[in-house]
Image 1: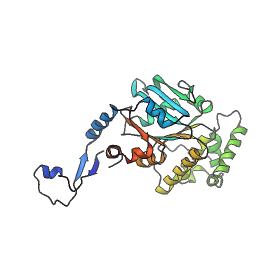
Image 2: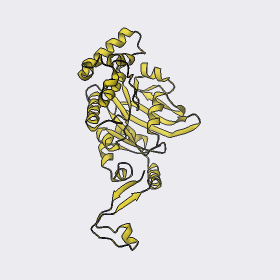
Image 3: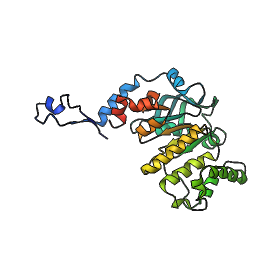
Image 4: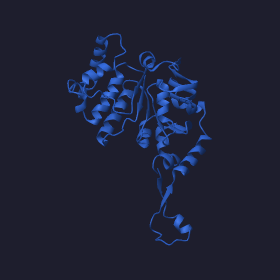
Length: 298
């Protein structure tokens, strides 16, 4: 998709350079084609940050570490020598053009892809080859899917029980669900209602809450604001902020609203063609002119 950038009034426009007439006071849109964006983004990969930089951004208590990951689907490699670091109670937002491999990073961590080489570690423990169920039950990782994944005909309460399906007994799952309901009165008030009657924001809250039943260390959240009205988007980001700041959860997310995601996150990574191209503090990347021009709409 083409991206438009306002040409400053005191600079010659492309039209003027070509000898075309036009009022000097009118701004002219400069259009970056998809090819132009891809070419400039590839240039960023040549200056990719080192592991030392990633370690520094994550601080001294790294919870999630990826090293040299090559992964994809079947024989198709999507991630190429990809590394990542995020610390305890930190949040990291992945941005980049469509097809850059952002969701594939989440899939790979949780065990949904083929890993050809490299490692995934949680708290220093290698969990690379664990199956998704084992990563949830024993690895301390939960995944909140991009698509609407609530069980519409089940009640809110029953959806939460499903979050504990890997626990040793239904009694444990129900006790864990009760703790979640105590934390979120909005869901408690609707506990006996079918999930289909919930608003979009409430459904997203239910999806995140269901992932919390197993008390994971790390939450992988794919497109938290997807399809939501602005008022519900703010609610979801407030919930994530509580999980991070109050409960000490580590959050790794992909967010379609890249600017909002970066402004929220402690750390931001820019992916290009399955490789890390840029890393920095979230707010700094959100304010970076080059990142803004290529990935944030100006």
